[in-house]
Image (tube, rainbow, N blue to C red; front, side):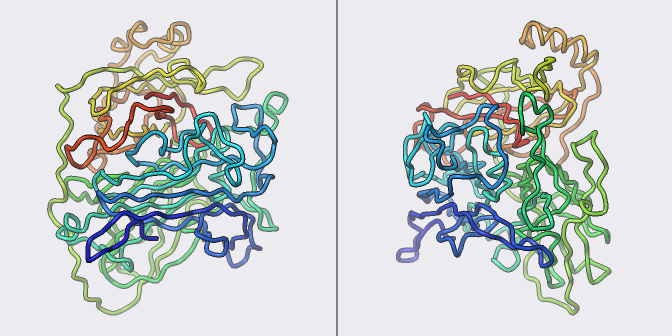
Length: 522
Ligand code: C2O
C-alpha cells in the first residue's frame, strides 16, 4: 500500500484506513486454514503479515487503525499479569506501534493507548483515532505491530505484524542497489507452532499456574513462517536481490545462513543504511531486528539455496536448532544468464556519527530478574522498577545521551528504544557478577554498586555491519553495553514537527514480546 499520493509528479501526504480482522489464513498447503488476526484494508484483503506500507521520506502518512476483532481472543491470555482489560470485558484491546518511527507520543502506540472494536473502550492514555507518521527520518525499513499492554505477545502471535518502508528515491536510486518491487522484498520471518487442525499452538498452562494460570515468559514454535507461509520457496533469477529481513518472532533469535555458501551483503539494519556494504556469511537477528541485505544468486553454484537458521533458543544458552526450525525457506534459482543493472556501491550513506562530547546525560539501565518463592517465573525489571512505576528517564528532545545497559539475566535481550535512535559502541564483560547482582538487588543503583569496578572483563567489538544507527541492539548476558542515543534523529535540522514531551511519552523495553520489561520516559 502506498502511504503517499502523487499530484503533478510530486509526492503528497495520504490518509489510509487499515483494520484488524479475525479470519482464516493458509500457512501451508498441508495444513487446514488457521484462525488469525490480520491487518488489511478489508477483511478479504487482510493478510498475515499485514500489507507492506511504502512511505515517502518527508511526506506524512496518516493511518486510521481500526479494530474489528471479536470479543474473544483466539489464543489464551493471562489476566494475572498487568494487562489491558476493558471494563465490559468485551472486545480485544489493540494498539499499533510503528517500530522505528519518530513521531509524536499520541501516535506512537503506547501500551496503555489501546482501544477495542469501534473504539468502544479506550485505554487511559488513548487520545486519537488517526495516527500521524511524519516519515521525517532517513529512508529505511521499519515495521508495525501490536503493542497493547499484556496482550502484545498474543496479538503478535495471532498475526498483527507488517512491514513499513520509508523510501527516498533521490538519495537511494543513485546507490544502484536493487530497488524495484520484483527484486527488493521484505521477508517477515517468525516461528509458530501449529496443531493438526491448523490452529496456532500455544501452551495454555503457565510456568507457575497457581499464580499465573497461563503466562509463559517466552514463546517458541517449530515451524518457520516467511511472509505468511511456512517453509516457503521462492523462484528467483540469477541476479541480485534485496531482502529486508524482519525478525517478527516473539522470542526466537535467528542466525541466518545459506546451505550453499552464498553470502549476505549487509547494506542497512533497523531503520538506517550502513556507511559501507559489509559481506557476512551469517546474519544474527534478535526479535524485532532488521537486516537489509543483498543476495547475489548469480554467484550460486547450485540451482537451489536453502536459507537456514542456526540460533539456539532461547539465545544464546538454549536448545540447539532441530530439523524443523533450522530451515527457513528455499530459493529455486532459474537457469540462464540475467541482465542485472543493479550494483553494490563501495559507499552507502554516511550519516553523521554521534558526538560523545554533546552527551547531556549518562544513564545506567540494569535489567535483572527477581525471584520470589511465590512468584515464578521470575519477573524482569529495569533498575528494579516495573512498567507501572512513574517515569524514570526524561531526556530532552534532540538530546544525545550515553546509556550503559547492564544485562544481569541469562539471556540476550534485544533492547528497543522508542523515538531514540542509537549507536552501540562496545560491550564489556562483568566480573564477579553474583556479587554485583547481590548489591543491585539491595540498592537498585548501578553507580552506588560501583559498576565500573565490575566492568573490566572481556571487551567485545560491535560487528562492522551493526555499527550504524539502530533502534534495537542485542544486550549480551553478563555484559555492559555502551550505547549513545539521540532523541531523536530526524533527517533535517528543522524543528521537530511534533511535541515529543506530550503525554503519554514513550517506552523502552526488551523486545522479547512476552516479557515487556519496560519503563516509560517522556
Ligand atoms: Cu517493536 Cu515497543 O516495539
